[in-house]
Each structure stands twice: as structure tokens, then as C-alpha cells.
Image (cartoon, rainbow, N blue to C red; front, side, top):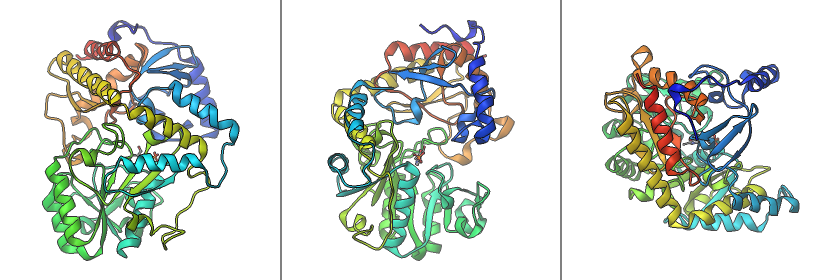
Amino acid sequence: MNATAASVPARDHSLSEAWFERACNVIPGGVHSPVRAFKSVGGKPIYFASAEGARLRDVDGHSYLDFQMSWGPLILGHADPDVVAAVQAVAPLGLSYGATHRTEVELAERIVSAFPGAEMCRFVSSGTEAVMTALRLARGATRRSIVVKFSGGYHGHIDSLLVRAGSGLITGAEAGSEPTSAGIPRDVAATTLVARLGDLEGVAALFRRHGAEIAAVILEPMPANNGLLLQTPAFLRGLRELCTAHGSLLIFDEVISGFRLQFGGYGEMVGVRPDLTTLGKIIGGGLPVGAVVGSRALLELLAPVGPVYQAGTLSGNPVSMAAGLATLRKLENPAVYAKLEALGASLAGALQAEGKGQMQVVRVGSIVWPWLDAAAPPCDAESIPSGAEDGHVRRFNAMHRPLLDAGFYLPPSAYEVLFLSAAHEEADVSALAQAMRGLLT
Ligand SMILES: Cc1ncc(COP(=O)(O)O)c(C=O)c1O
């Protein structure tokens, strides 16, 4: 059982701290992906030794209920026995062939069957690579350069998409697509126009000005990388119409949402069909993977059939493919999604009930974003309060360490969503809600 957060003494993390110190000597910031460094919530990261089901265990021997779940891939929970068995079965047969094998065909068939309108799939090794491939494909198909993205959307660490909008979003590039990272040439950033989520007229204005140069519009149809900035189906339909009218491609980045809410994509759930879909996370069952899915006409523009080059040493490696296939086989059972939906509803209901008016919840299925403020949750990045005005960040940061001490592992950032898995139980979600309640002031 997890204790009520307010009543728990601080845990001793001396072994984690020692490992972090050692890591900082050889790994920049001690981490291989920035948010893991706990910079936004303060304190030092925790070193994990094992995980099973909904639980993590750290090197100091503490147990945690996990609500981060490796940022989304682990929809069945940690070390799901069937996924582990599939990996154990194929690993002795060779970890990588750098050549064709059967499981990559089987997984591709299953994925394509879940995306009506799609006919082909190309595997890569990460979500970033999938998006990179989709952009190159879109540019190759349209012979145009510009890509429209939305502020608050994350698509991996691709040079051209690491840009933020200036304040005049509607005017896009004219307002300056500022790189969000050092090391990105301005000319590369200038191939990206940034629009505001939900602002169809803003996107229409970009098309009026640059329509003949826009290769694609890319977005997470359910934006889940800056909190959960839910969009209306009408907005997604409007983007579909604009892209079709101007001969541009619509790309849905479903690296998070793909297979998370149903056996397939979020686009299909809301009745909007993109030209290309990018996937990752769940389709690798916890091992590195990414994929681009779309029509034969588009996908056969990729080498070796077409002129758009793309390749990868470990693409479609048999171990990731086996983990992905074992995961999708289990997800074909609708009872899994029914359980995830019920758990999500319970967590949202309990958080709202326990929230003393300070806790609201944005949720789709098993993705839950607690918004710790009395004001309405934002629907676009521009509505997110900045700095000291952000009561949500203040409250979240104040509760993050006490929640760790009470045995709840939440993502170390107020603007990351919580992921549930089929390995969570009702008691787990009500324990988290009670613990968060105890920490609200
Ligand atoms: C929507 C979206 N696209 C792309 C990516 C990049 O995927 P990866 O981290 O596997 O490169 C992420 C990662 O979180 C994502 O959430």
C-alpha cells in the first residue's frame, strides 16, 4: 500500500544520488533525454533497478506506482509476460539481421490493417525518425519545402520542427520561426511555419500567402506534449480540407496516440483521415521503433522503389518487431481498451472529487492531465500562463517530491501527461488521487 503523501517522511535516495553523480561525469547532465534530469521539478533523478506491471523499484529498494510508463509505450504495463516471452523467444535466434525476416512483415500487416486508407508501412527506430521520414516523403511527393506545425506540438528532435512561434503566429515565418534549440540554422527553421492550435483561420491565412510552397501540415491530432491540448474534430476536418484544397499533405503524428485509445489511430476515431501517419512507442512494445503509414502511392516514393531516400541499420530488427507484435496481439482484445477507459475515468473522477476546486482533469482514455488550477485548462500553447503566474506549475512542483516519497512516480514536469496501463488497478488510481489531495493547500 502507498501511504498518504502528506504524512510520509522523505525517502533515502543515497544510492540513486551516487549514481547520478557518477553519471554527470560521463553523460551530459547525467541523462540521455533532458526531461529525465528533474530540472523543472527540482531534486535529483531516481535510478531504477527493475519494473513489473504498474510498479517500479529503485536502486535504494523503494517501490513506486508508475504513472509515466516510459512516456507511453508500456500500455500493457512493465515487463508484460507475453511481450517478454516473445522477446526471449526471438533473442537467441539473432538480435539483428540487417536483412529481411518474417516478423517485420507480420507487424506491418497488422498495423496497416488498423489504419483504413493506409496500405503500406515503413519501420524506423524512433518516433523522431518516423516524423523525419514523413516530412521528407511529403516534400518529395509535393516538390515543396514548407511545413506548417503548431506551437505546443512536439514531434521529436528534428531540426526543422524545433521552432517556436513568434508572438504574431498568424503571419508565421514573417513573424520569425525562432529555433528553440541552439545548433539549428535559421534557413532550416525558416522552412517551418508555426500556427496556433485551434486557429483554422490562421492556418487558412498561411495557405493564402504560402499555399503553393506548403508541402505538409503536421500535428498531433490529440496534442499531448504540452499538457493535453484537446482539439475539436471540426478543427481537424478544417485542416484536412485546407490541405486537400492546396495539394498539401496532412500528417498526423500519432507517436503517442497510435493504438493508445483504440486498435488504430485517433484520426480514425474522430473521422479525419490524414495522408501520412507517424507511429512509435506502443508499436514497439517498449523497444525502439517508429513507423510511417500511408497509401501505396505515397509510400512507394521511398527508396528502393522511389526517389526519396531513407534507411536504417536496425530498422525492423527482429526483437523490436516481436515485442510490437506481441503487444498488438493483446491489444486486439477490446477488453484491454475497456479497462484502460474505465481506469482513466476513475482517475479523472477521483482527482476531480478530491481536488478542493483546485484540480481539474483533461483526459482522453488512459491519458490523464491533472490541471492544478481553478482557471479553465488551456487548449493551446499561447493560453498557458507564463512564469510565476502559473499556479499549476507551482502546485505540481510542490507535490512532485512528496509524491515520490509516498511511492508515486509522476513525470517530472507539470506539462507532461500521465499514462495508465492495463496493469494498473482501480486501487492504484484512487491511491494517487488521495495522495494528491493530501498535498493540495
Ligand atoms: C508526438 C510525438 N512525436 C514524436 C516523438 C519522438 O519520438 P521518439 O522520442 O521516439 O524519437 C514523440 C516523443 O515523445 C512524440 O510524443
